[in-house]
Image 1 (cartoon, rainbow, N blue to C red):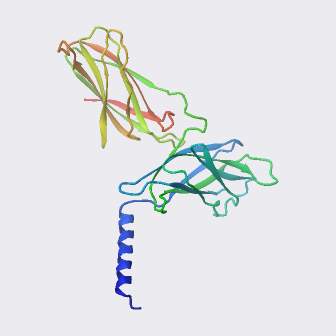
Image 2 (cartoon, one colour):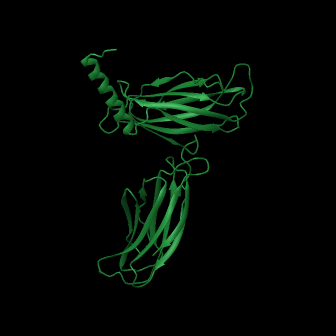
Image 3 (cartoon, rainbow, N blue to C red):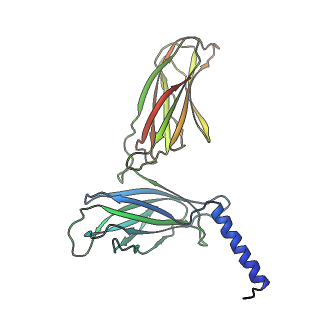
Length: 293
């Protein structure tokens, strides 16, 4: 077959485009697998954010479908996306067959979509009991159909954010020492909740000190964050600090900072409250905290 020059140029441009797409690491569809628990009212919820990729078009819609992968259940799996008071749903009606639900295109613009996966009865059945493995296929799209940026984060429950739970450590600095250092790790829970942020606060446990106490938090590839306790008389804690750096190793430095007197001399005791949290405020795993030289 002889290819005309214009056709050849078009073909080359298309192949270059595909090569650029795959080398960029862009994924055209997000596949998310999970298992609904056996309880009749079991549900799993996610936070999906659709946004413009660097240099790309703005998101205009969220497109999704779901497969029920466990056969011989008296119920189907249902997926619902919600945004700004509107919602759309789709149901997978052929469990275990590999056939997905109808695809829904939810044109609600960029931003955060709430996603819920739950069970719905098959016709003539009466039980919602039993586990169900499922697979979500979804992507955020621009108005012209181009894929945009997308993130999906599993929530701890579908019932809103839980009360914040913090861990505490107490320590001290000797008279002439000015710094103390630790490392710790934030990790996912056994249920697959990933850390979204590490949150921290420091307060004096000693009174009448001529200096402030700073708590600095570092993680490779992210900006350093700092909070400062300034009142040893009332022992008011610092503001809360947040490092939105996800799972991984964090480094903590407690540092005496000279106040008006210019002195950092003196023994001091202090308390730190901190923890690792998922996107909806549920505590994840804080582990392997150790003192560094």
